[in-house]
Image (cartoon, rainbow, N blue to C red; front, side, top):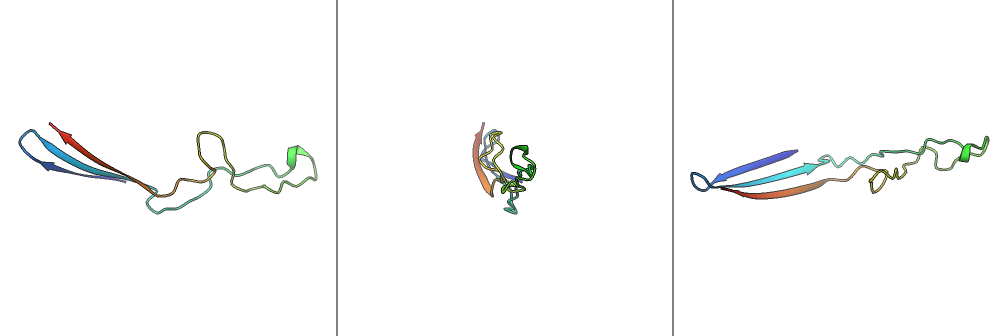
Length: 78
């Protein structure tokens, strides 16, 4: 979600304030889960991490979505 407000100082100068909010509902869910039911494709050897969230290694810090965060902004335009 994004919101901003512009405050007009003069005819050509403005001060703009803004906020960006991410994951507003703060819902955390797993992106990736372990999909291997057996360890190393060994028949009958059950994987204890089956369907558990895991790190994917694609630049994500964990297998879960990021929690709520916000970014504030102030900009002077002329």
